[in-house]
Image (cartoon, rainbow, N blue to C red; front, side, top):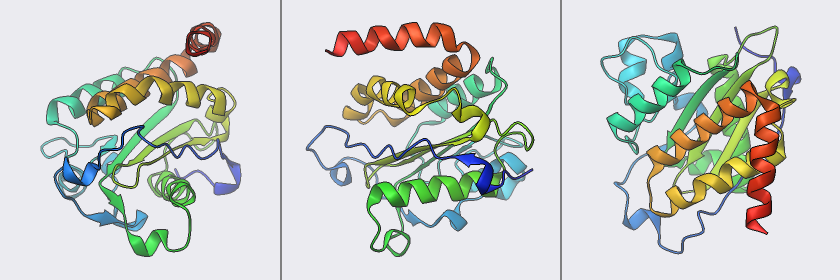
Length: 212
């Protein structure tokens, strides 16, 4: 049930520098680089897809982490939050070591991250076709690029301002290279925003005041 690109809402590029001058290449296990077409769809199920995505032994998954940049416990926790989400949106997560240089080409990393996320979002068919309520969280660690792709329905609530607040909250975890905890925080925050926009507005306004 793929979502037509024309109906999708571009929330805006969320390239984000992890605010750390230490190179990730020196601290993370070297992984591969990927084109969107390389990313299997674990949501569709099948051992080949879930194994590729670092989720062996499960029938299907909303997470693809082919380089195992997150621990099994972290992925299990994130999957649990997604499965127990109180909003009616569907959330998918893709974490890769790097995007393929041939895919990035002359584009900026932020533009490449946006295209990567949107292509995977469409390929996986995240969200309900009629309600366009899908959300795809994409992180390319070594490229230090991040993008959240939303269907038009989800994007009416999950605005760019909310996403900025979500990312600010995750930055401390990324600074210490805890990708799993950062993604967990992002997924939980997204569900809270989508399930109760009024409370989310109060919470994120409070955070904005604290940062000033």
